[in-house]
Structures are given as structure tokens and as C-alpha cells.
Image 1 (cartoon, rainbow, N blue to C red):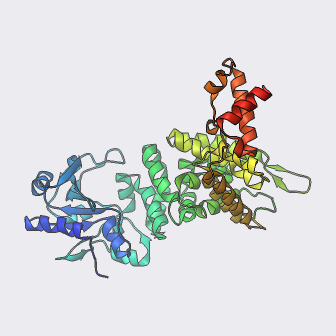
Image 2: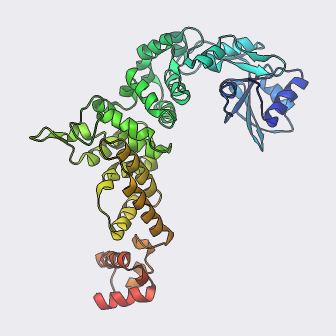
Image 3: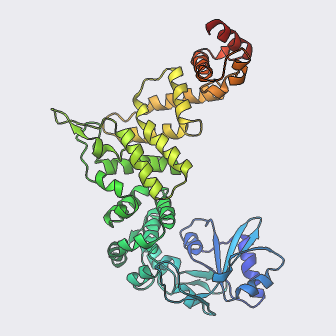
Length: 443
């Protein structure tokens, strides 16, 4: 298929060539174009050295964050273009970075250091596609295969093990047999990689369109026990419950993949039932129950996400969604919905509904989610009408109450709580004069 590049990318390549330097589109950008999708990022490899790149593009805004590794970013209003000098990487000492990077004049030297064949492609108008490792064949066959011997590639950079799973998950490809078994045998090397790098690859897997396929690969490659070992107990855990026709692990994968690709929701979907093995009881009729599993799941989720060095906000948001996922089955009055919004927060309430929809769809038996759609509409109406559901939405505050002669202390909170309960039933009462009169009358 013809390769069509955005004009601003072509211009960069033409400027390099006019200055007697080579310029090839490389890596994931050419891979995506061959697959018929427009890349988010464009990477150009060149024989120009970093100082030469800066000289050629002296009239452009540039970023020099990767200059030691030969990378200069050209900033344009249409987007960023990353230029990198052809490189030869010497021996890797820590399973992540080369001991030294040397610049090269040869494109082939640059391509042979890359991780997978589908990323070892290059293109420009003059030469067409350069494919020394049969990457196009692997693209056609939908196969993830390393450039050269997989154990050598993974020994150089252990993170490539996870990156292979991530690419398979994002693209829907299989992993070449030799590459697959090398991933499996060398999986424990991931323990040497920083948790932040593991976390970022893992998040990309669960946000991909085929997230359950990616998670299944992680399970089969024995990598889950390295990333989130708490999930291991959910694998093959029979729920013995008429509402579930899958084990806990595969139910969670189903919920995750049926959720929108929003990180908090996908993580909550994956972790919402992680406490079930610890909460499991079997009644006299052989039916499984999981009383309090939501609370146990919150505690386990916090441990797992803290180990992954997630932000406090992400841990808190996921914990809220996991802890409230069972509220799907409550019968809520309008006041009850307002209390739910207050607990969950305006930013998370619709994420909770999405999680609950997916949870219901992935259960056995009745999978009708109409009641959740109606609840979603009711919540939207409450928020759109700005009906109060938390104390700081009241028309008065603690200072106003003190001006009536009350002393600071517990009584102020009790009065505000009383008023909130009242205006959640009767929103029309929420003005300062009404509320002050109610305080005078009731307190």
C-alpha cells in the first residue's frame, strides 16, 4: 500500500535530504502506516549527528531532552517529530540501558538493534520500504517476533518481554513460538526493572482494545505473579454461584474489556472481585457467597496499586469504584442517589455506573442493564439541576450558623447535616433565609 505522510513530517525529511543527510521514517510509525492507521508519533532516523540536526533546524523550536542518545525533537504546530541519529548500542549492563551509545552512518546498524521485526522497518520516498528482517511478512501474518535471537534481545532489555505482550494485545497479534517461550523463561528478569516502567506497559495492556487477550498472555507467561501477584488466587477460582458462569479471573477480564478504556474504570474492573477468594463461603446447598468481598477487594487493591507506585489520586479513585461496585443492586430513592453521589464524587459517579453495567453484562442469567441506564439518567438530572447532595452546596455555612449565637464545635456539623438531609428531599428550601429560619425553629 502507498505510504502517505503528513506534510509537516515530509517537510522535515526533505530538509534533511536537501542538506545531504539521510532521512527514514522508522519504528512504530511506519508499522502503523502499513497497518492502515495514522501514528500518534513520527520517528525519523538519520545519519546527521545531533549537533548537525540542531544546525539544520536552527530556525525551528527544538527539544534536546535525548541529545545524549542522539535524539532531537522538532516542535511544530501540527505535532512533534523525533529525529534520532543512527545508533549502535554496546553491551547492556543492567537489562535496561546500553553501557554506551555510539553513532553510526549505516541505517542497517540502527535497525538491527531494534526489538521486534515489525518495528525494524524504515521508509522514505527514494528507497521505499527497507525491511531487512522480514517485518512486513510478520505484519501480514500478525506475528510478534524479535529481531534475531529472542533471549539476546530480552537479555539486553528485559522490558521488551512486556512490550511484546503489549504489542500483541494492542494489535491482536500472536507471539512467535520461539519469542513466546523466551518471554516465559526470562519473565523473572522483569523483577530487575523499575516498577514504574512495568506499570506503564501494564497500563497500556489493560487500556488496549483486546485487554483480556493481553491479560491472558500475562497469565500464560507467568507474568501476573510479577505484576499483580494478588490476582493469582482468582485464577480457576470456581464461584459456585448461579449468577456467575466464569471463574473470578475470567469474569474480571470480561468486565474489564467491556468497560470504556479509562484507566480508573479498567483497573477497578480488573480488581473489583479480587477479594472474593478470601471472602468465599459455601452454604448447605452448595452455593458460594462472598459477603464483604467489596471491602476486602478495596484493601487488596490498595496494596497492589501502592506497590506499582500509582498516584494517591488513582489509588483513591479505584478504591472508591471497587468499594461501591455492589451498590448496583440497591433500590435507590432520589435522596439515596444524592448520598451515593456524595460518597463517590461527581467525577467518579458515571465511571461507577459504567463499571456496574460491565459487571452486569458479564454475569450469568439476566444481563439486562436498563435499570442502570435509568439510574444514570436520574443522576444526570440531579447534577444538571444542581440539586444539593453535599454540605458545601448548602446556601449557608458554619460561619453563618455561628452568627446566630452557636459556639464552634460538634453542633455546627450536626446542624449542617440536618439541613442537608432536609434539602435533599426539598431542594427548594436551599436559600439562606429559609435555612436560617429552620435553624432558629429547630435548634
